[in-house]
Image 1 (cartoon, rainbow, N blue to C red):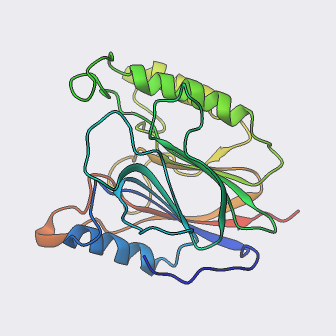
Image 2: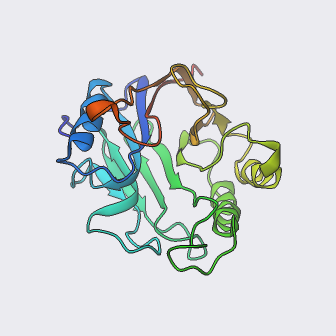
Image 3: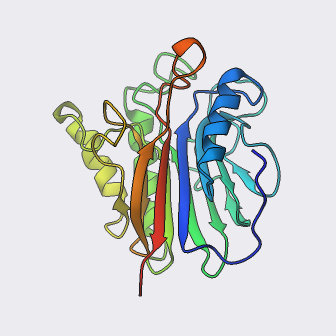
Length: 250
């Protein structure tokens, strides 16, 4: 993902990319197609989940801790955060009680800096029938949301903030999973506003990947990226998203 870094202040309109890339590797046909689509969107910030160092290494990339409790190939990270603007103050732990390997927080850019929190919330069956096999359905999901709520409540509402990633919940969710929907709602402070609810333009169903932003950032547009890959097979089991966020007028 070779784009020129920007050393100056953040631009007034930011382009945000978000995609669970289902462990696509950099030199595979899937990986190359995904990075080409993302590059064509001219992004400022990209959050990938389930990535194999797809955006490369360097000072403009931050990763979650490698250990999420599952064995995996080298270079696998549940969260990969890339920015065209400088990334500073990276936190890849969050809290010792947070299910590991699924969190990145960083300050992006300057004048002003944006607080970016990137997550990959465990799915319903995390470590139930595979991995450590020591959890009940939704246990790690709910534990993650509980600790994430505490982390988000400690953030400063007056600082521009973006929260994004794979939440493993549709919004709005099915009545059958009302309890986990309530847990997600309780975890998100009311000063972070959702911009990815419902069926998004170009999609045929709701996504589980979401973007929230503080009042400092207005959402201008949301679009989905083409998901057809080699021989008509999907590039991922998730749909890629591109959002444009504009700094709100004071």
